[in-house]
Length: 454
RNA sequence: GCGGGUGUCGUAUAGUGGCUAAUAUGCCAGCCUUCCAAGCUGGAGACGCGAGUUCGAUUCUCGCUACCCGCACCA
Image 1 (cartoon, rainbow, N blue to C red):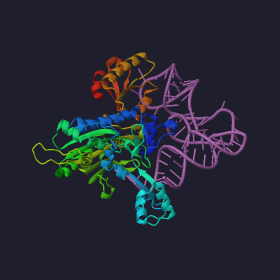
Image 2 (image 1 turned 45 degrees about the vertical axis):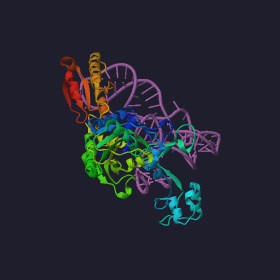
Image 3 (image 1 turned 90 degrees about the vertical axis):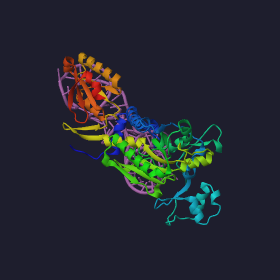
Image 4 (image 1 turned 30 degrees about the horizontal axis):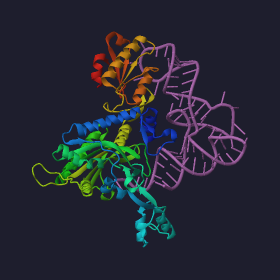
């Protein structure tokens, strides 16, 4: 068995060819950093989110699911620190490519009135005074570095109508913290979970669906007493890994990495990224952050509403601290695809297939008559197909060309089992079930099929 | 954002300043076929977008856009 290095382009090509993922706005030349999920991609994605939701929300007594609006009052983003941290005028050292705050460099150079300067003015002064970077190199143009997509609510364009597409789903949970307390009065610790879109105006979208401008997150905010944060942090870090294993990702490709202080988000006191061996290198797949009481405190202060939790035992009220395990859905899906993508040889022919776990496969089974021009086989196969479709859903029919080709087609989209109705079926009511990974066939009674494929 | 590369049927490739833009595979229709991309017949399908040069541009030039690689960024 020969095994070649799998590239991202191999995966992207298959995704396009077989209807998993397409370039966004493709017929108009595309839009950088956006991708559209096709019929098989969206099913695969849904299978992942279903497992996540069941695991972390439905099947737990301490979790509360929500689905907050993407558009939020701009005060949310001011309180969270995103507005302050996302709007810097930056200038690049043309040699080292390091970025610096333009206003800071100007102030350091003894320029007066920097705070009142526009972007263009700062740019002009840097060029006029020939201001260099701290390393003594020439600087590029001053640019607004804005990671949030700004938008406008309503028809009038004034300062109060500004809002942003959320850069993280987390704030939707923090602003609903009080609502959940008031409606459910949960015992602490408890958590909130949400799946939804988030948007970041990335400078350079890269690596297929890995770094994109519109993406989907599966996030948990778990509220704890500050004394016990570490124990919960470790627990959730492990839960994240367990989830990846449940998706069928190989453990040797999963690497937790402590995030050094200088690389942590403004809200984080401690973070561990879970990195994964993608075809383009070891990159961040999941994050787990200790957000302390940063967000609840900020919202308490700015909104004037209490974010305190009152323990039922009568002990002192406190603002809970937060452990945030976050899962990038598109990245998880890419990890699943890239570890499932397999090329090998079968009977001397190259074969491409997706070794997807059964519960993730977008199509559970394919049904074929051995021969298309034998009406009795086709009729029987249709009967089996209808039955499986009703019982399992996500079952396809294929009577094109010969069985060999159909098997390969099924393999390529990761169908775990391909059922073929042959002449023996008409005699004894058994069909052949061909396994995707081994290409082995077994005979199974039609009445046992549903059970076996489930 | 910087530098480099690439963009031709769904996919993978070929090719040309001028005739109907080729091949494989996939796809569609029909035939054939008793289990791993067999065969036959027919069919649909492409030069990323916009300018410029030119009698004529898919081909040359410029701009834009998208993707890939390296750097930087990634709250």
